[in-house]
Image 1: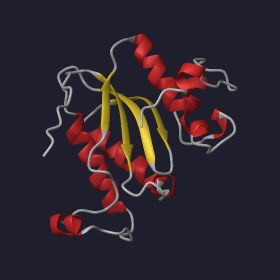
Image 2 (image 1 turned 90 degrees about the vertical axis):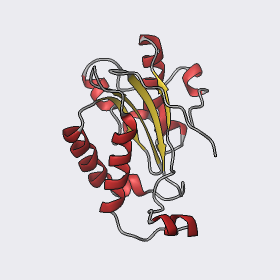
Image 3 (image 1 turned 60 degrees about the vertical axis):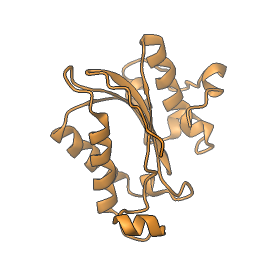
Image 4 (image 1 turned 90 degrees about the horizontal axis):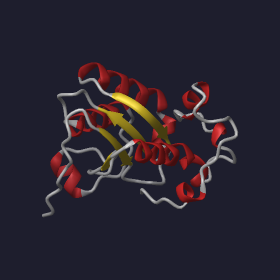
Length: 175
């Protein structure tokens, strides 16, 4: 059995990719209000800052910064994933293994994380996050995707409304 080693950096900033088990199901956008609620509740229970985020139909990317004395993002993800699963209808296919463990078949078991090393690394990952809806063909312009912190970045003057990623970001593969 593989042993996953997580980067535990108290107060660290991390990029995450979290995906549904059945990638063809649009559960995240179909239940966007539920997802927003569980994120908000999770932040109340165990604070963290969402620096950038995009919610796509079947996966999400985000950058979080944890409090200075805290490196436990895994518990936060478990909380978010389990509480979201509890809020949506039980209509997914379940493997025998998931049935035996009493698990839902909503999320992939694992998630991908990357420790943000510096400002340039942060910028590249934020660009990747905001470009993702266009990358996956959900929109013709980044500004047209509603479930993204891109709009906050435009309001803050970080991006122009007509922003699109540079070729190095368009070719970046985080999934």
